[in-house]
Each structure stands twice: as C-alpha cells, then as structure tokens.
Image 1 (cartoon, rainbow, N blue to C red):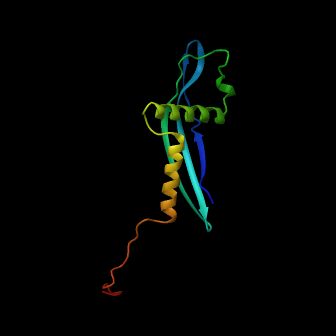
Image 2 (cartoon, rainbow, N blue to C red):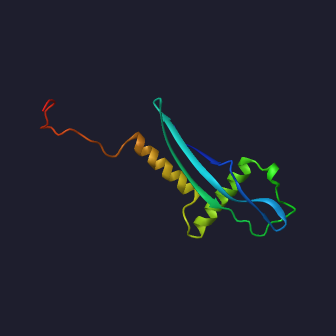
Image 3 (tube, rainbow, N blue to C red):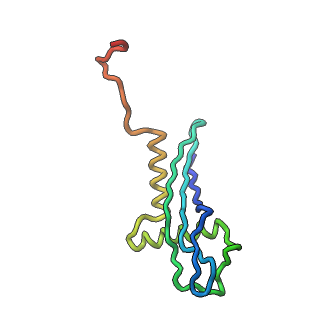
Length: 125
C-alpha cells in the first residue's frame, strides 16, 4: 500500500480587520497526518505548525467572508504559503513534508536498527 497524507487546519483561526474588511484570516495552525497500514498494523506520523498567511493586496471583490470559509479553502491557503515560503528559502515544500513522512513511516515498518542480545549472554544470569 501507499502512505495516505491528510492536510488539515485547526478550527481556531486568527483574524483581524484589514483594508476595510472584517475577520481577515491571517494565521492558521496546519497539520499533516500520514499513515499506512501493512499486514493489519497502522503506522502513522503527524506534524503541525503555525503559519502566517499573505494578506497583502486583498481584493474586496474576491474576498470570502469568514462565515463562508471552508476547511479546504483554508488548507489551500496554508499549503500555498508553505510552498511560497520554501521557494524563498524558508522551510520545505508540502511535497517535501510528505516525502519526509513517507521516509519516517518506512523506518517504522522496517526499522534500520535493532537491539540484539549478545551471543555470550545467558538467559538467567
């Protein structure tokens, strides 16, 4: 199977009045949950962070009122900001976050190290 990645945002959004518009969302907490099930065992990892959204040059004609926001829309804003910040050398892209989760889950499924009892150890010292 493959790792399933799910992006979400907290339902607690930071807003402000800006450029004559009320309840402008300017900061959100995003979360990336990733999981894979192998032979009935589910392996998972989660990351989260707060991010400031770019609210420069708001257009009242295309502004979505707070009451009409959807989680998908705000997740899209967060992911766009993550990718834009990475392009400016600040952090990593969404695809890199997901690839990192893929690697960590692969290590959970097939750990690269193990703890073994030395061959000279006795079962009952």
